Length: 169
Image (cartoon, rainbow, N blue to C red):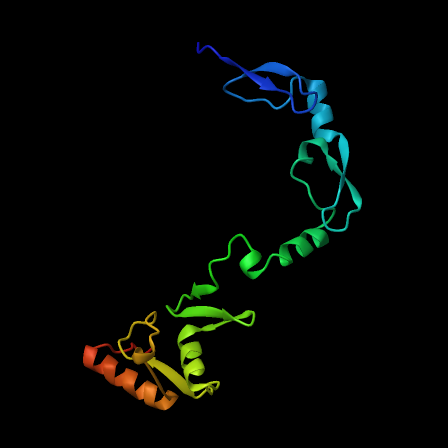
């Protein structure tokens, strides 16, 4: 039979030291402390609205907000560069194009580069073509503005030369 080792622990409720088993670590020293620790209530102050609210003793270290509404206010205040997961305002979409954040919304970087160069917004009928075919290479000398019709014709010729044909359903 395997011998159980006892390890020193501290009760989360009464803060008294006790010996707990190594195979199943315990948070409380007795059933009484478990009952009080898991089910007794503690009053905390909300970090947003500063109203008092009740939480179980076990949650006193993690609870910061009285409601989901206050938690949402806290999370929405940390947008953009203030957010811990901020990655510089650029993302790469599933279609392979890089997007940049401009005025709170993401737009395709290649369109943004050409629009800044021309000093105007591109119309919906205008397409920015990557000359080398690399969707992430948004250097000005690699981009060309053309109509959607011209771009479709160019891509059809390119596909035809490569032997690519779409299967009809």
